[in-house]
Image 1 (cartoon, one colour):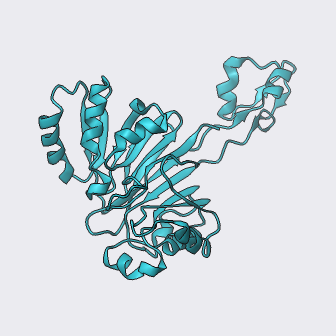
Image 2 (spheres, rainbow, N blue to C red; image 1 turned 45 degrees about the vertical axis):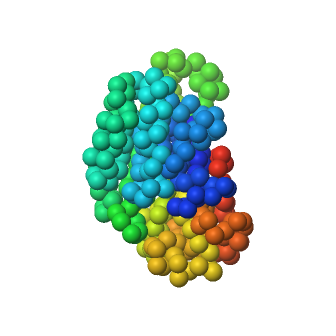
Image 3 (cartoon, rainbow, N blue to C red; image 1 turned 180 degrees about the vertical axis):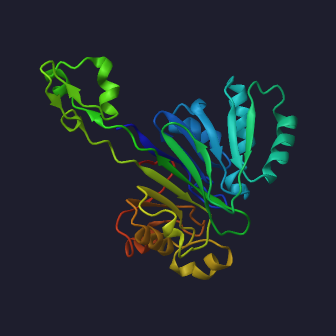
Length: 304
């Protein structure tokens, strides 16, 4: 099975701490790297995570709060210093484009590669990226300004060839793709070998939903139903529920409620308030509602 992983670069919230960086992630899927949010210090975190970050092709910004986008201009500059030539695609609210262009004019002259901006409408669900194996959709969220999450979903793949049967029937390699696409095989004596004997079922498509920042949305589960892995902000615990409601954030228990109602495979908590020196309290509250919960942490890697 091809790798599908989430690398956590930062999982803190707006106020900097010595324990957590602001929000940033790398989604690694089938040898492609996508960045979700881009908080301060992201280029240092990219160095630490030991992935080929020069392969990052698309950056998806959930909203225009600084802890989710202040690292963008620094990363763009760093890519230029490293001699990048491939285009970098930025998907974000349209208000960012003019500001980003002015920053690049001031700090990133003679960049050496193109930065392509794609305006995202956070108010509706839409596909913002697609290739042969993957789609990325927006997930409208409720925060203090236009905000969306992102849903990465694999497209269905072809079934697996049974090498033992291919060898047994001496089927030429030139016919492999035909068989993957459903063809039977006819022997010299006219006997038809059904396709079901030549292949095994394809891997089930995997999916990853990123939901930060947002207040608790009782119906959000319908948008992320059945995803393999859900990252949902858990800025506060039950002790700070009024703060969550005031600032349009969620508690760990609320994040777990979304995960439970959606029937997801696993839940990752993140975007922790600086009030918490130990996030175990958030983990425990979430596990009272949903069993398979994990805490995000810098340099953690999760298999989707």
